[in-house]
Image (cartoon, rainbow, N blue to C red):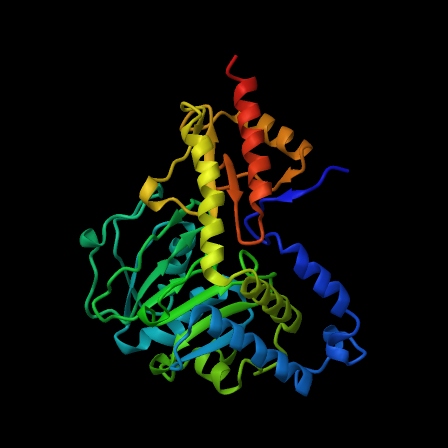
Length: 365
């Protein structure tokens, strides 16, 4: 069997080293003689793990002491509702910067709970991020919402926008822990773990303490950050195994050199793919503007900017024969998409690039 190289956008590849740890701990966690899967969430064993994982998050991101670190179920879509339910009460309105599918879905969800101002003109083509000087921000907004990396379209913020004192909320599901960020510039950061830092089932939320105690009366307790914070993320039985896996991935990041190393590798891996696209003389086409190209999710078309269905299917079939899997673009946009998250190695990306070059050579005769 050929070696598998997983470029899936999520659930995504986990570090092989973490799998080895999970195997060793699966049936005897922390010397208890039983699996974490059957351990009480009210046990000292789980309390210790819960604190340990919060601590590694705080270390990696240098999270200030006035921020709470929460672990919630419900994925990113749960937070699409949780954000307005927890924050929109102050003024009843919020600014949404829609740069792709996920921020668009978040804005539509928020409209159920208050007024949403779309900072950018509506579009169904997401190929970049307009300069902040063109944004129509409302100084009366309860918060400004962005998605720092759009998984579907491959659009990524390369800097943190200045929101003039209005709390900035960021969905970082697919690029969290890929580089250092200044947490103090955000009111709230969240990310579903299954893309870059773990497996499906848990969402990491980092919220500034002054933004707690503002939830709408209709906010369910399970989505209320204040209630979750008061209960140290153990309001009910949490997604313990997903939290544990996330913790082991974060510890792996720390051992491998932390976020400086992750950022270095992200630049190296994405540059390899973008270089292959740029040097193909138009055979491969990247739809995203260069200053907004994601280092985590790289979409591209084959044959033309609109793509060639026959060539793309052939490429995917040939790639899979080489063990390069989950490269098919999102169903909404088609084409090819390579996700080069932290766990994807440089060697795997080089294998992909060699496959791209071989396919180009084969079809340029």
